[in-house]
Amino acid sequence: MNPPASLQNLIEALRVLPGVGPKAAARMAYHLLQRDRPGAEKLASGLNRALAGLRHCRLCNSFAESEICELCANPRRDPGLLAVVEMPTDLAMMEAAQTYTGRYFVLMGRLSPLDGVGPRDIALDRLIERALDGVVREVVLATNFTPEGEATAHTIAILLKARDLAVSRLARGVPLGGELEYVDSGTLAQAYRDRRSL
Image (tube, rainbow, N blue to C red; front, side):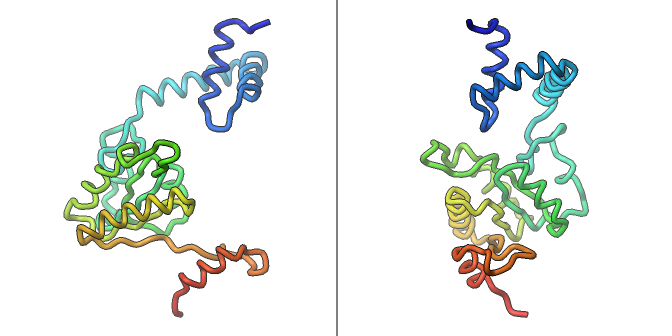
């Protein structure tokens, strides 16, 4: 027996979330309807408010409730430093480290030709325009160290270096508190290449 159409629509709607297959979506839907109706209403309300109230910041491309987000509007941030990250979650992690004091540009993705994600899909044109505003003196590439993140960083570096802009990349290596015997050989090799003098 098929579930009622409205329940089936809810299950299909939940399947748009990453990593949620048909069984997990059905479990979520049944849980929300049977055990947590206030949670379901809160979820629906929060989603509606976010869809109605959020847009992309004109400067950094992250989500904001106004034309310019709080980080970009903060006069204490160094406008000469521009960190390029893939997603808003990466920006949040950079901020949690409490070491970076510049501004950001959020690509909202990464280059992935196999998945059909090209330069237009991640706002590379907007990034180039932002980086060449005459204020930015260095672009810090903080994309992930995945094949797609590396390809994205490489592409951006080529585009910006051709325009005589300073470009740097986050270092990679042994994690803080890590023990060498448990670090994979690729990470250890990269840590050696990225070593610095004391």
